[in-house]
Length: 593
Ligand code: ADP
Image (cartoon, rainbow, N blue to C red):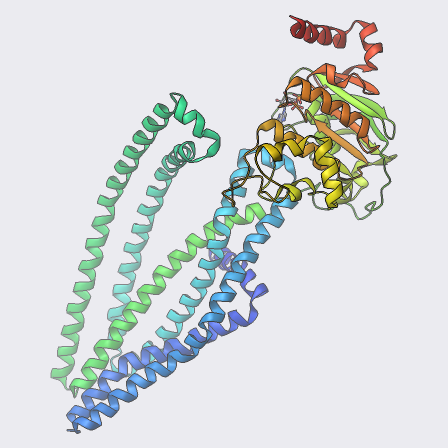
């Protein structure tokens, strides 16, 4: 009972977008189903009876032609409204699908970044992306088919009750047996699916290895292809074995079902013959109507049982999709009523006894204290895994501190409207991207700038030479996603564009996480100098691995295992002969050698 209630609740939940985005579409669709299904059945069952009766009454051929024309006309007329509405239905269906998909993107934006780290949540996310649109369509189509079957059954049941009530008893017995067989078949299907899913996941991994651009060089040039082909063949064989095993079990069910149909047909014929002998069926016309209405009733009832199984399936999918939509976020959705919606540049940043740890990781930032003045240029250095990127992510509010607080202009970072805050924080991560748009649109992503400004920035960041080399201009696309003439850029060139993009806007805080790591040392040195001197007067935090590039920073912070180890200017830290001195001299030695 509880399960049934949940099933209907889930189906309603999936149909909700249809109601929200297409009330008229829903009403019209259901109206057609409710009116047309009984009409269809009556025409189907009674048309032969009318013809046969006319024949029995010795009507002329022309009379019969007129009757046949009327029946054909009625069939045609009833389909006219559906045909007229068809373009509207197609348009509306596409619109609803687009909106449903958009809702997933909106939800994905509202989910805290931390969830993407967890495979469990990522699976839910992927599941919703793959299934939500399809399942809403399924649920709505289910509603229509359910109503259609229901109204057809009511109509046919009434006809059969009048002309041959015993047919109902035959029908109910066969229905119960069919239901049992169907349940068995579904059980077999579920077991098969459970065994197939891990194999399909493996096959999809091999598919990605062959298909995705990021693996294409590896797969052509390394023994990875052997691993991929071996794995594909092995999983393929497993897939075949599973199919064979379950096909055998399924075949037994199919044969039993067929047998049941034949037995029912036999019993029906016996019943009808008995009725003729008893004089209950007086003419051939009635015989035909009884036969047809029984088969239509049988087919609709069988349809209904199948639909109930389908509803279970849709409901199980809805459960999984709802898990995604029920994910609670603390950062992306406004968690407090009072949100600071004004902010002034450049930021003063204060880390006050900050502690942070990831779920499922031993790494922790603990008791971090730091005051950064407005406009100050801070460089963060440290070994891999020291916590530099984490520091940047805390300032973007991709994660929230677990202890202490980060204050922006004296106010807790959590009190700001997160969208507003991010509008004032410019960030370039190591793995930065260009997108499938023109060079001009890529550079002015954060801020629409004039042609002259674009020219100036291109010159300053030496982007003009990239365009020249590729015989491209400001309108050229920066990927080949949609344009065959798109430019393919190197990692360093992408980083240059990402940095130039940041310089089009005035930021309160500029976060640069190894923004030039893919550049050659000379280009990186020049670019870092440029950034530190022109970073639009924003408070700037730059994570760097080549220490010579950040000598001009106002302060350099050395991080080690989540702690702030040293802090000072280049000269101060060199004099101190501590960790920074050690790292700097080591790197310098490498270059000199
Ligand atoms: P750095 O930028 O200094 O190289 P990070 O801040 O990226 O270091 O990472 C610091 C530590 O936190 C590393 O040990 C890393 O494994 C761990 N870490 C980073 N991101 C996550 C995450 N999303 N989940 C769990 N641990 C993480």
